[in-house]
Image (tube, rainbow, N blue to C red; front, side, top):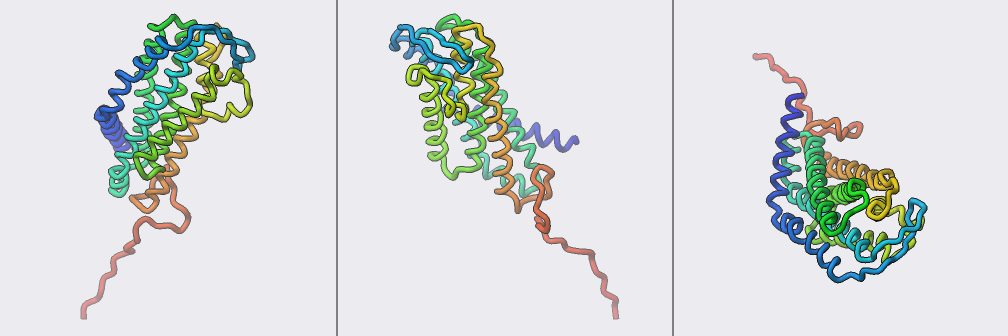
Length: 278
């Protein structure tokens, strides 16, 4: 038990250190999110629009403020997906060597997921505070819950992409294009009807609908925001499966990645034989 805990804490420390060394991501957090919200506030039209919420109500709100919500969700999902992809991708070779040396796979992946939770807490508080400074949100805590759910969904996607894809450009393209399409479909400006059936298959569906409703109404939105959590769970399990498949011939038997019947990671030398003299 002590060995497992030590393995986890060491892996978590290296994962968090890797995030802090990602200067591009730190710069995007510090400058891109507030700049994007400010640009939208300064340039978007300040007229009322009416859109249909998945909660079964029609919401009338300022176009300027709804675009700020959509832009903030786009910014944090791109950053979270990019950070988790780069951290996983850059550490992939080292992770393979660690597993080859006997390091437990589950601890390596759990450390990345816990680091995602830390990033989620910091990004959520920072983004919600910026939106609150721009204009008073009706339910800031509910908006924060929606932002956190969106970050978890795309952070999990970034971890899975880090194990699955072969190049940095591929991962960056997947994260950017997926978030761009998702936000565009969820924005009430480009798509006022938010209760379409096909939209529910997208990761940002629940968080976007919840954030918009919580920003302008007193409706209960936590269950709606939670619709992104199955995406987070599915991508986390997918990352573990992909990691196990890539390291199935490495290291010792791992309870998180059971071997197929008949497979052997190392040849069994068998009992030593003694030869009689003479």
